[in-house]
Length: 128
Length: 128
DNA sequence: CTAACTGCAAAAGCTTTGCTTTTCA
DNA sequence: TGAAAAGCAAAGCTTTTGCAGTTAG
Image 1 (tube, chains in turn orange, red, blue, purple):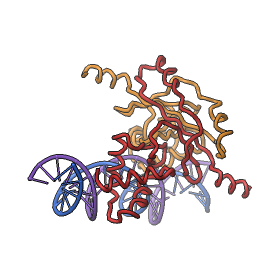
Image 2: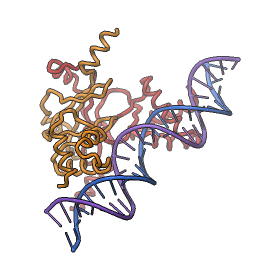
Image 3: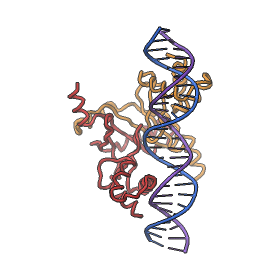
Image 4: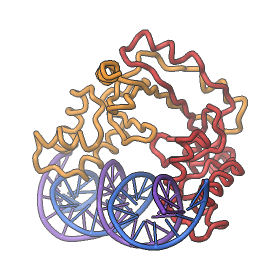
């Protein structure tokens, strides 16, 4: 557990903004100005591997990272790319439903919502 | 509707393999050997815009394209990246559920399953 | 002490873009 | 014939990697 890894983990635990790797890099740089982007990427992967953080692979968008490791879904603004937790529990039995109908062995699922965040919605409403 | 665009569309309609842009390029090149990758990308976007095909933005993986434009979910092999349709109807009312609990305006959702395809499952089973 | 890790820079992989020439309606 | 599109190559953006030097345990 190096200084760099510890600071990355702390930073992510303190944030609820679901930052991208580059945003994590910017945040961490305030505390460790000489850290490199490569180190950030490497540690984000290692921490995700260890289960200390969660790597959120979004469709058609760059990866985000989450200090919250419990399973949950997300909702993303299609205008500004903001990401929030979806207010909804996980669908525990959804995988069993298709298990019988496919020859795949199901290992998991991902659900994500798209929408307009409150801010972008206001702007859109004002304009039209 | 140029020759290139028509061939790209035909190719996609004939395939059920959910090819990536590069795979589409390779397939189309058999018929139009001088087509460029840029043209393929441009036309895939245009065709998706027109609703003639569907762009499948998968989490943490490159985009795929689908000649089938009706809404459906997918299941992806985490080992070989093969993509198939999930044998399951769409969850029509899932968006209403969270609509009341968030200030987002919900526009859509994406659900994808991860698993091992039959081939990769066989290999894994043989080995262990 | 040494295995693991860092910083740096280069490279890789997918996608987009600028520009000139060609094509389609 | 003029607007849209193609071909080609370069650039863009995120992520990974090679390597030499550094650090944690």
